[in-house]
Image: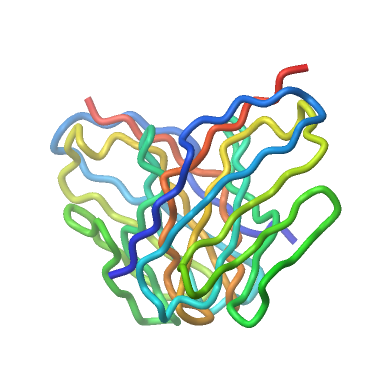
Length: 110
Length: 112
């Protein structure tokens, strides 16, 4: 039981490049979330999903897209990366109240 | 939407002393309040949570209190140890599976 995993762990992009972050959970959770964490800003919700095939916007959705084609996976896409998207990205999943976090992806956009 | 304020932003305590972190929330419909601990370079991990039908909950050296009328809740750590040094986040949500709104975090340093 791996819990919540994220791929990749680190990535450096140039401005304008695109990439996809993958989150996978093996706990059969309905709910999945993507957060970004910036120094001194806490965790801010980007997008979330309440079930397979559904997605919704969070607090800071601009510049990101998501998909939940399979219950166990939640993908976060950056179509045209900007330096303001330099951050640590955390995925989380939940079957109710408690959210379990993945190990994070450190993204740097030059 | 919900807004969660957390204070203080940094807290330095002597080993063995108590630490208290306070959070206020804006949406009176919020009914679930978790606390997460994040060590440097690691993921946030749930340490304790409380629901709105309970006023206080304790787990060994940590406790959380909730005042629904005043819309604030607090984390209490007693007999602090060096391994308690971390960033602590409070959060609030309205229903199971609903999105969490996090406070800005408190960096706790326990000095030996």
